[in-house]
Length: 220
Image 1: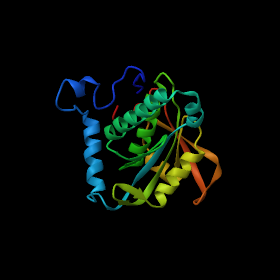
Image 2: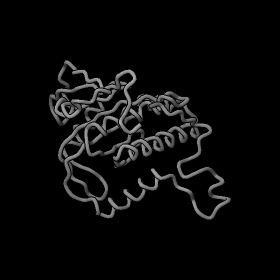
Image 3: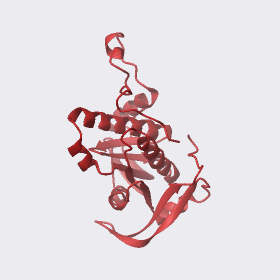
């Protein structure tokens, strides 16, 4: 479901300037509160350990060219919009934002379906902004290791490399992960015919995932 969001008029996630000048406490939106608390807990070591989960990357397409054309304040608003929408979307689908890497967000979720829903919903929301930002995303599923809030392992590498080869406005998953989407009538999967040679991973069968016309994420 597309959610209009204006880069010029929308306040930052912690509230507008008046939230700082008129009240002694900063009002934090629920999604950001959950994100901050989760980040603190994981960085303190509470979430350290092994887990089998989905890892996703969402990258803004054409960001280098955009950054050349935009004034510094416009670029700042773009990044804040991206981060705001990413946190809201990931938290709404039960995931966790691991970190932001420039124009890219890394997140984890319990299932492939949730990770794909995050990528598709975030893409819809950003496409609805005045800049019509496009994403290319990759999702992988498998064992991971969490240390100090960050997530490591082969699954992370696969998701990152899938994002590198994904086209604009697309979400790409491994074929093994795509099998976990069986039964999702709202999604359309299409096998990528060629085997991509992913750096540090090797030849990998891939599937492109999109939302069927009229399809909606279970959480939207």
